[in-house]
Length: 384
Image (cartoon, rainbow, N blue to C red):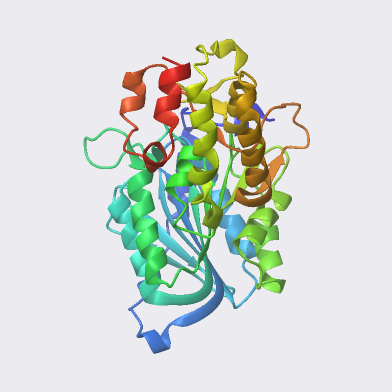
């Protein structure tokens, strides 16, 4: 995979800064809120959130250009709210077949869940659609973080959006539009975790993410929008499959799509296995047996590989392990696609945070995955 495209934090060049500032030199326009009967109806609305006030800023202009060129149907709408390095406030682009409307906003913090919520409320006030997709761009962050803003306000340091708060905002929006959010796409590194997907199970029919690193600027945009032009009847899972199909092989390590309606069944499927392992009094597992990977200083392991390793320590757990894997492959994981050029094995689509200590785990105990699943008891038994 091309190293220059797989990004952690870095430094943005001045040339990229100038390019993105130039992108905003358009006349601002505003759209008055229409009545319900006068709202424009679309087959699909894709809402992009692009908090690129960081080293990803140089990819903003190419993405906007690809999206603009891709919209060739009167029944498809793309909206992008974005924040670039060197600009003090957010902007918004409303992209239709024959027009691009640019709006200059008065908001400064693209890591604010409230600002994102205002974006969703504005979209609901303006448009109606049979299907919606929400695409979140930016860096991945720690377990409960996503999409930072390096300059959220005067004199303030980098801020991150919180996944659980994000979940609350999107869930409310989905309820307000009668559960028409078909796809939530984490277009971020390392958001293909059990914890993130479990948190977002009620915000969309499907969630798409990358278990490890993800490239930028990505390349699926135009082909996806052309496909939607002729196939607006697809659901969120099929849309996610097309994103994967149209993505360049130099842009991703793997993609995972979950069927969110089945995630609520996970406690009943997983907890019996965890109880078997806990009761078996397995000795602490040496971490060198677990094929760990790291992101932002935190440790992760493939969820299924971890359970497979533990289940091999006790014969009584094998039945429950087999039942869980069957559930994951046939129901919960709609699709898992590794890069065809990858030689990496023992990946099944979802990572699991592996704390180094109880103290590191404690700060994440508020996440619903640790409330509903017996992971804390498991970690106490096999890690600490």
